[in-house]
Amino acid sequence: MDIKILLILGVVIVLSFWLVFLYNNMIRAKNQVDEAWAQVDVQLKRRYDLIPNLIETVKGYASHEASTFEKVTMARTNAINANDVKSQADAENILTSALKSIFALSESYPDLKASANFLSLQEELSTTENKISFARQYYNDSVLRLNTLRTVIPSMIFKKFADEREYFQTDESEREVPKVQF
Image (tube, rainbow, N blue to C red; front, side):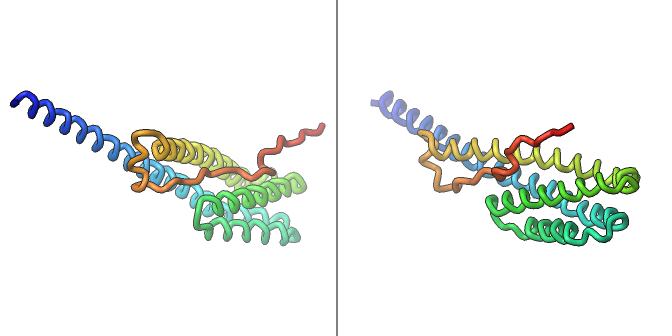
């Protein structure tokens, strides 16, 4: 009789540890997604801080391009005010497009293109764009892990502790291959 009780007690203890492991795994995945989003947010803030400096530098050379500056400023404001992953991704895609128009302006103004301040800001923005890209990838990898845990057996029994998350996706227009002409 003692062996049966010990065996049952052993199974209950192993099962309890297994359930705790599954629960902790789900919570770790949820926290990893939250941390990954915080990293994306940090890089986006850095980008938002660089944009006004870039615009002021370009304004000095191309003051009559006001509509371009307004478009970038509006896109930046919309991106800052986005409140979920989908709207953030949409706003970031629009901002990326607007920034491309600023860099296209530099082609029309050789003095601007040669300005040390503009080149420095362009390099900072380029570095930040790379960091944003890496942060987005890390976020999407974390979302994949969490969403997978929410749908596979046996961890799905704890899915109520972590909501399904959206991926940070690019706009269809961003997926087009750029045309290179010589």
